[in-house]
Length: 101
Image (tube, rainbow, N blue to C red; front, top):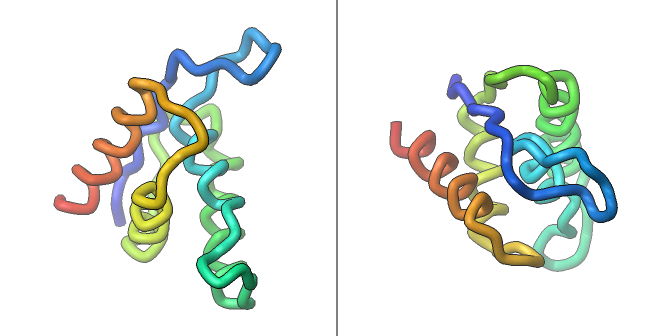
């Protein structure tokens, strides 16, 4: 198990005052279509399991993730983001630190 820190970012939802947390960034990664363009059942199960934890813990300071769940988030974070922001680097660095620990 790994403890994912659900840090507050300075990134806003488009047109909103609310700021995103790391759990929101992770949740966005989970919606990216898998390589090859097909959603296989095992991939969906893993991503939905992670998403459920992120949604349940959105207001928590930390979220416990299994190693396989962290590995999936780390893998997806390496494929890139749709925009650049310093907090995305902090998010990617946090995933990297967790993977090494």
